[in-house]
Each structure stands twice: as C-alpha cells, then as structure tokens.
Image (tube, rainbow, N blue to C red; front, side, top):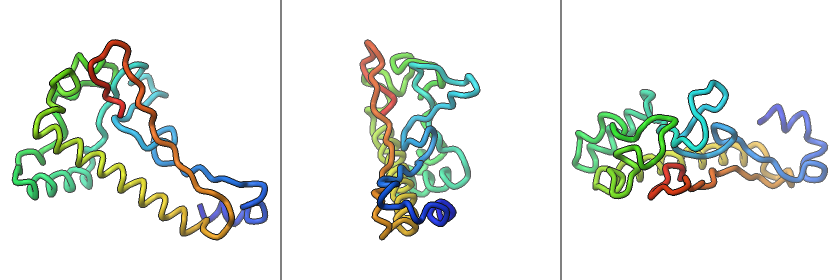
Length: 156
C-alpha cells in the first residue's frame, strides 16, 4: 500500500478518486471460501470454511473455552461438506442442520467475527496509508448468492 501511495501520490484524490482494498480471495471478505483457479471448486458449490491454520485454531480454542464448551475448539464443523457440494447435501447447511444448533451458532458467530476483525485490520492499515489523500477507501463483500432450490445457503 505504501508503494502504491508513493508511486501515485500526485493522482490520489483527483484522478484516483477511490481505492478498493483487497480483503481476501478475489478481493472479497467472504465465507466459506473457494479456490476457482485450480478446479477444486465450481459454481454453485458451497466452498469450505478457512480456519485451520495454527492462529485460527488457537482463536477457536480460546473462544470455545470462554464459552464453556472446550470440545468446540477442536476444529470447524465436521459436517460442513466439501467445495463442490450443495447446501442441502451437507449436515451443516441443510434445513435445520448443524448451523441451527448451539454449536452451529457459536461457530458461525466466531467465524464471522474473525472475518470482520480481519476486515477492520486491513481497512485500518489502508486508512493509515491513504488517510488525508482525498481518495475514498472501499472493500468488496461477498454477495449472498442463493443456490437454486436450496433451503439454506452457505455463501453468506
């Protein structure tokens, strides 16, 4: 970001009126996520939760302990499906699925909270670099696309 500001400083706020800050895959703040380029995912598959590195696992474990359910911190939903599945083909996203249980609400609150915190950190960093330039900052958020005929949608 600093390199961009330095290189285009004379254009910021006039020629460059808006800077769209990338938040993640395809620039979007979204979940579940899906890699398009390597064929792992194809529309209208649900994608998968991305919470399995050591930092996310530690955060999930801490949140689970704080909620009084240490067992919920051992990993993401076991029944959330795979990249190419439809929501109704999973235990988690189907109608009255695991998402609607106490555990499901806990996990989705934690996961969406982590995404929002990530977005806040990225936008704070962008504001620190581009604040005062006159350029407006924006970010992309995933549009919830309904899977035709599905009772629920995984893409929130």
